[in-house]
Length: 304
Ligand SMILES: [Zn+2]
Image (cartoon, rainbow, N blue to C red; front, top):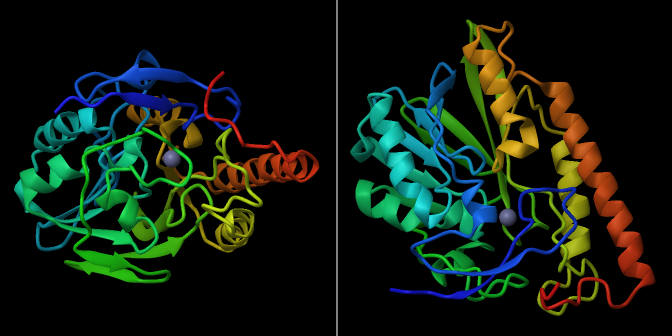
């Protein structure tokens, strides 16, 4: 099926601040997004945790005690084949994936999920607030118009504080809404070099250019949701900082250092994690002040 539409960019870069606008199809990504979807050799982050995503849109493989697998995020629709190949490169069988999770219902993290579910038969879990957007392939997104992706229905809802356990591994869901209505940050204990650490997979804190924050009839509580999310995140342990985009946590730099033998493991970065939260909150506060002062804030249709 050929889909055309206007895709709003700048999803990844907090500092981008500019609109990106292009037409695309299901078969090809615009250059801006293709640059976030370059193949990257998979690697081990922690004892039961592997990176299987592209160079910026992330995907994480979690290996449980019984040999069954959990996969978090599916990248773009075009990322799914890379993810499956990366899993096989690491010596794992994608058909052992039992649970599929999602950070949030945007095309660059949920686009590959339908294909991954079809390839693995895994159960798909999604937050109550993002599930309708996932089921509609982004057609009913409160802000992104035309950023469509293959729809996927959740088999089970994810609620705030819910534990997802499989084979001795337990992930905890933290609804950190604002970027989407059901944006989900996951945490889980991992072991690195024999030491227990807490990993945090940040959903996203990016305020997109067309987010109104206040007074949006499609998302009246957006600003309050962001503020609650900052409070939640500041209270979480984040020793191993991971996220939906590699650019948020310095994926490529940390990976290069890790593969060069750096000790301690560069992904152990609690200071970097909390610095990122602080930077994101400052950007949100600035934008909220702008939106309070300017009723036209965010009321753009995406035209540059
Ligand atoms: Zn997003």
